[in-house]
Image (cartoon, rainbow, N blue to C red; front, side, top):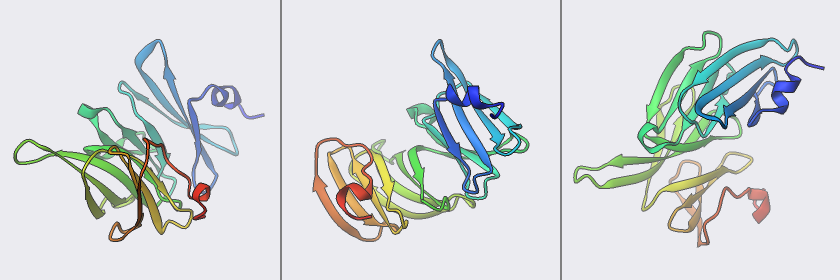
Length: 199
C-alpha cells in the first residue's frame, strides 16, 4: 500500500503522466478559497516529487507530454492563463495569458483552448486556438461568435468537438480548417465521440 494512498483518496482529481510513472493529485480547502495544492508522486516508490501551492483557483491541471512539466489552467476572468511548471524545481517556466479553459490531445502534444481578447473598439473577441504543448507555439486559430466553453478530441486526435455558448456544437478537423458538422443544441458539456458513434 503506497504512502500517498490516504492523500490520493481525498484528492479533488487524480492524473497519471503518459508513461504511468508519476501521479498528480489536486486538493483544495473548502474553508479557505485561497488554499490550493498540487502533489506529484513517483508511482513506484511513493516518494513525493513536488508540492505546488497556489493562492488562486485553477480549473484543472495536467502533465506535459514528456512528463517533466505540469500545466495548470486558471479560468477566472481576470487571471485567465495556462501556466507551465517544472516538476523537479517547482519553478514556473512559462505563462500563456488569456486562455479561459482547455484540454490536451490524446497524445498530450497539443492543447486546445478558448480565448477572449479585447478588440480595438473594446469589444470582446472570442476564438479557439490550438497550441503545441512543448513549444507553446499557436498552431491554428478559429474565430467564434461566443465563448467556447467545452472541447473534446476524438481518440485519434484528428477531430475536435467545440461547444459554443450560443448553444451550437461543431465537429472540426484538428487543424480547425474544416467544419465537418454543426448542430444547435441545449447547453452541453464535453461530448465523447463514442457517444455519437464517431469513435
